[in-house]
Length: 387
Ligand SMILES: Cc1cc2nc3c(=O)[nH]c(=O)nc-3n(C[C@H](O)[C@H](O)[C@H](O)COP(=O)(O)OP(=O)(O)OC[C@H]3O[C@@H](n4cnc5c(N)ncnc54)[C@H](O)[C@@H]3O)c2cc1C
Figure 1 (tube, rainbow, N blue to C red):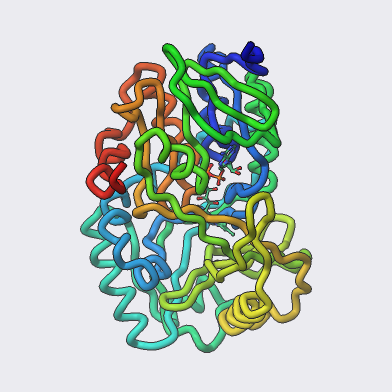
Figure 2 (figure 1 turned 30 degrees about the horizontal axis):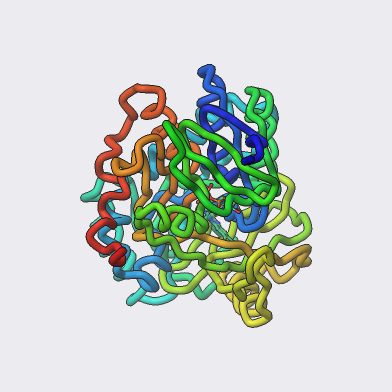
């Protein structure tokens, strides 16, 4: 005789990153009974830098040019996403160090500045407020930048949160709303079962009527056996944080050509990342820091902001980012009634609360603030491998 399920819940969310947690919280607040299953291994949410991105990241244009059309189409999401973070902070039990002091994407020569001029012109046509600053203007607002910098693109609506503080506060709010978080629970398979789905986990069977896939890089593998194609890939990335330093960097700093993001938390700690690679782990093993990324990332940080050399490195780590086609994958899966997608596009931490709100509104029978039709998994159908 089949064993009874270890959990039977009307709505189950697979994935307890920023998206899964916010979505569970928003649904529970409206009286939906919801549980979150998370294997606790590969969340970009626990590894990320807390940058709130609005302008298109140069790393994306240069490394993944094929993703650009999708990213451009989704550009209006980013200023809206930052506004959702502003709303969220007011609901959270503790401060998360949200500061929207603007972002600077710096250039070191005329060619890079031209790249930024072209990018800014394109972004303006897509509705972003951005401007190009020369070195004199930068000296007034960002004197910490080193002599190598000749100009920058400024996007006033960019900023940051402290991701550790934000994740802690969001998890607390989610629990307070009555959501049960099942950490360390990996979903091995999803099977249609009557009017819902049966989820096979190592601990036993879980029964759900409605299912949300907020599983980041694990999404593609979960859906493929159901005949739904979502091409997620895991991208292991490197991060660093220093010990507290005197106030130095007031903006979110990026580079026109090279991989760097830098910012300073209210604690004084400098957070340095920007997409340097890490070594992929294996199942249940996290990715590992590469010495070359450690040296390259920190060397570049000191080159752009020389005072960074005085700060002491506290910790370096690696985590898994998820890539698809640059655009979020959201909303119902028509061929699998009861399954909903909640996968943010590029800069997924920035998008997390917005994406969760859009999917929650759809599931609650409301019209989301953005039309989800442009974001469904349908767009991958033509590229699905033959069954
Ligand atoms: C080093 C690094 C720095 C980053 N910096 C930034 C930044 O500054 N700003 C920004 O906007 N974005 C940043 N990102 C991207 C951002 O972190 C992610 O896009 C975002 O956190 C994705 O959130 P999510 O909830 O969709 O997925 P995740 O946070 O990846 O969470 C998905 C969860 O689902 C779990 N899961 C997967 N499969 C299964 C399964 N079968 N069963 C159970 N659980 C499963 C995973 O283990 C994970 O815990 C960064 C990413 C990395 C790696």
